[in-house]
Structures are given as structure tokens and as C-alpha cells.
Amino acid sequence: QLQLVESGGGSVQAGGFLRLSCAASGRTISQNAMGWFRQAPEKEREVVAGINWSGGVTYYADSGKGRFTISKDNARNTVDLRIYTLKPAATGVYYCAAATTTWVPNQHSDYGYWGQGTQVTVSS
Image (cartoon, rainbow, N blue to C red; front, side):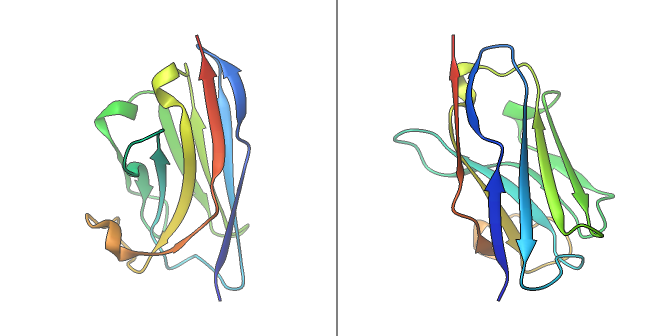
């Protein structure tokens, strides 16, 4: 059974940088597209970035373009999300998810495995 564990969250000042990591165990994620999602307080979970199975194709939500970088290391079975120039609007719980497809899916329902999340709090 695939398990995902996120790390790297914390409390930072606006303008700062965070690197979130997602470690997969139980089996390889080399054939899975992966995604990072954010759930802000009292809001629905939304995708912020996605990456295909090989790491060669990436997707970013409009809110994160230019400030988020997603990367995938199939040899290490990990997926990272780097967040630059953090803003208070980036506050929320960040979840790593593995898709049941090799390409980045459009539907959240195509993500079959989820981590427990890591909290990011950005203060102004």
C-alpha cells in the first residue's frame, strides 16, 4: 500500500521560502503523476501544482505561477514543492497526492493516495 508523508511546513514571514517534501513508501511512484494541494482555513482543498510520471511536464495553478516549483525524484521516491516569496494567502495545510494516472489529471478524484498534510503559516 502506498503511503505518503509530507514534511517541511512551518511558520514563516511573508517574503520567505519553504521547501515541502513528500516521501513515498510501500511502492514506487515512478509511474504516478503527483500533485500538491492546499487547504486554506474554511476553504476547499485546491491543487497548487502537479507533475507527470517522469517529471518532465508540470502544471501550476494561476495563484502559484512564478512562485511555486514542483519536482519529482523517482530514484528517491520523493516529490518536492518549493515556494518562493511566500504570501499570507499561502497559509494552509499542504497535501501531497499520488494520481492513478501517469499524466497530471484534471479531476481531484483521479488522485488515489493522500498524505496527512503539513501546515504552512505565513505571517505579514
